[in-house]
Length: 166
Image (cartoon, rainbow, N blue to C red; front, side, top):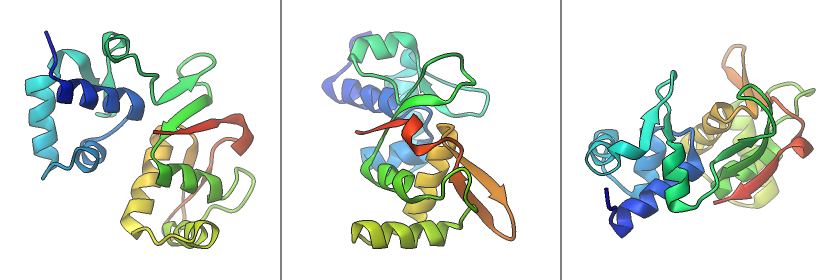
């Protein structure tokens, strides 16, 4: 299957961002809906992606070789080990820098949002910060602690993971 330039670029996004969801790809590709993402994946990239046990989108090994891009998460050992490298968009990198550490009290999305605002002098939307935290959770570097509201903190020491911005 020969891919168009657009399909190759989008496949590279999947490799970089995996594990990912329709919503993340929808925003990255500027599409109208998650359904439109699904239709694109099925029509253009069917042979190069799959959904894992949690319905997250992942690229096949062949896809990574085809586009020559490093995957979004790299571990030194088995699937259960702490990622050594994560490749994330800028906002996720900033959230990773300011979210509570693994030995600190977990914090709400709003608290993380305020930390991002203070540290970086930017004003992201609260939903964007929530999505960033959930994406970092899927990558295994943030954990959720359920209290009155879901709260978040790092699941790893900050210096154990190299964060690359894609």
